[in-house]
Image (tube, rainbow, N blue to C red; front, side, top):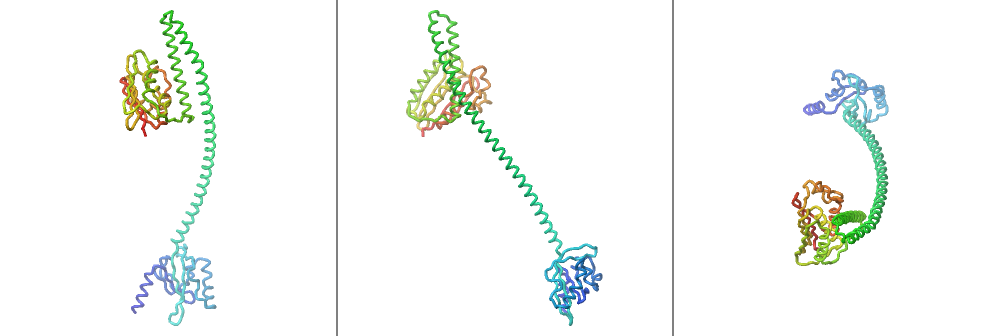
Length: 395
């Protein structure tokens, strides 16, 4: 009695549906889970043929299943694990997995069907199929897009290559033009320079201040133009990668004294260049020509941007760690807003006014310094002056 009650409780509370039929297919029992699946009550199903819960073609074929079993003695009417379709009371259908077994009971056989609803699984499977189809479409779309992108990149690459080739040609043309123009200008400039010196010499007996004045203007203009040509030639060589430092030992003090004497000749009236060296030695191992160019540029700027009756301080130092070169003036100074651009090519501070210049000098000095592993820095105050310092490590 207790076992019967336990079995009934298990059937009544089973998650899957359980239906029993007799040999003619008449429903003898149906548990609550099966009633919920078929949207029916026990009273509506018990005593009815099981085919009432089957949509076509299962409905028409069910009696043939039973007859075949009775003729052949096959163990299962529909078969364990077969997926079939159920018909609900409202006319809708649902998929389920059906397991059927025959059970001897009271001298006769009844058939028990175990029904596991597959609606959620089938719905999930359908969603997976739709998602897979969507992924295939997406992959195809992305692949097409990627092909277009690759084609566009290839086209852009070809355009860039063509552009770079043209730029290279233009660069080479520019370099040849700058080099040719600079050299072609030097010959007439040398002639003008010589002629102005001769005019000054032959005009001395006349003692005419106007002649001296205009000859001086000619010499100044020639000096400015020569400096411009030198800057363009230096920049052209740097851009072409033709500048390679040659590190050799030389007397820094001797070189500096020569530069000081040379630049003093082009200084303004009563401008004085004061040179001083400190340190443990005067021997430096750098590129003497590049150092000369750097110092002449810095002193030239100091002369240009300082007034008459001023001092320009030119200092060198060699200590245990560094070789230092500094040029200080008392000129117009550099506006703070311009200071971050001072080493850019062709940049000139906004307060230079009509003072001639190309804006290349400091860029060239910085690049020459970098080639010799040096660093250039400066401090400046408006109307108080500027100091430029180049520092080279001895190592």
